[in-house]
Length: 196
Image 1 (tube, rainbow, N blue to C red):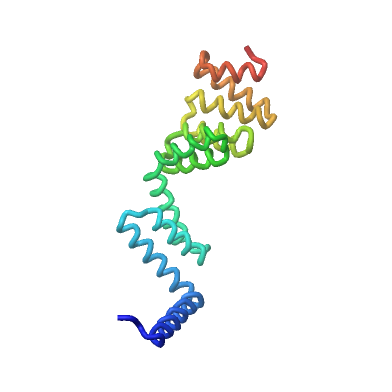
Image 2 (cartoon, rainbow, N blue to C red):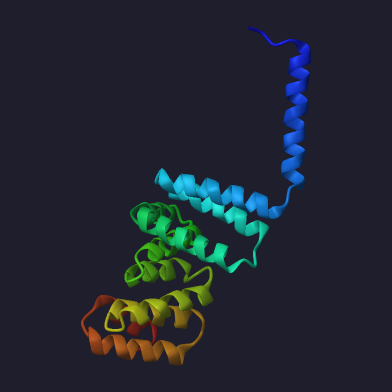
């Protein structure tokens, strides 16, 4: 059965009132609604929707430590669940020369795999020519994860060299050379530093 024009008008007015009430409602009520949405999304294993709902709640109360902690946990869970996808997307972005985007995907994957320094190494390599300070930070973190891995030290050395920090680059070269004297990356860094 079709609704009369009066019913349609009333429904439209009710809808408009609800919309206005939503916009002017107490932020705590809105936050509770977004948290409920997040809870339902988590129950359905839709971590991305849950994270997005909590992100909106955080935007309404950015100083709320409890909300920030919940968002951080959801970010971690999303990264764990989607690490392989982030790696693949990073590789695609890298092939297309989208260095910043590639680095961001590798960093997201690293959140899901925090003990994998190779992801940070890859991100640092992507940023060598675009954001050397960020490349240094990422390479340092990779070295902290696996200090005995020569390739991490080579990338950190390259980042230092790109930043005109030759002494620091030389130090990383020496440490990498101790670890893997015959490694090609170590030899290439040595050549770039004028070593043989």
